[in-house]
Amino acid sequence: MSFLEWVQRRLIAHGFNPGIVDGIWGRNTLAATMAFQTSRNLPATGTLNEATVAALRATPGQQTAPPPTPSAEPPRQDLLDHFPWMALALRKKGLHEGRDNAELRAFLRSDGKTLGDPASLPWCGDFVETCVAVTMPEVIVPNNPYLARNWLHFGQTVNPCFGAILVFWRGSRSGTSGHVGFYYSEDDDVYHVLGGNQSNKISVTSLKKDRLLGARLPSVGGPYPRKMVTSQADWQLTTNEY
Image (cartoon, rainbow, N blue to C red; front, top):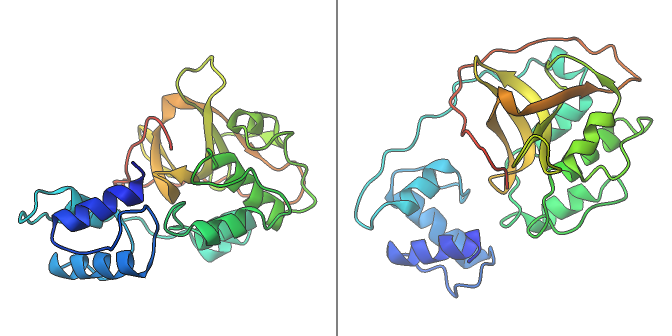
């Protein structure tokens, strides 16, 4: 069962009609989602955000309090000016591989190539590659940029800092699986990573620091300020990105 099929079934369980349970984000599902959000005193945006999903998980008739919102300040514009790939990534934040499939697929192929359907394939590397290639066309990306660990061969190695490409192991440190995204901020135990294929969307999520394999920045262009950004914002902690 896909995520959208689960959403449609939960809407029905709560008394809202999304139409046929087909896993497709259509106008009936959107209308049912917005009506459900209104009934739970949530902003009727039609977005399947964390608060909406938590409310859908609740037993029908049971109210749930929305989870706390991360209290992080957005990056300063003068910092973003040095990292055009971060500015682009932030503009695409929130796109979901199911709900926004057509828009997300169009973005991922905007650099002239793509791995394929993000609803079917692990697309964290595709997202990083697109953001870098579109904003820094002179930069050479790794061979097979869709494999997360290949980004360990990109540009120059740096200490983790704002805008850097962070590569993590997934499954086991000695394996081949991994995850890649952009450094957004950090706290004592985790890096807050702006990336794709994080809970099926482009988002900021938290990954344990002991999973980091390396941090990279382009070896051309710049200058790139080496700024460490601390934040105690409570983003979702993940251990197996999807």
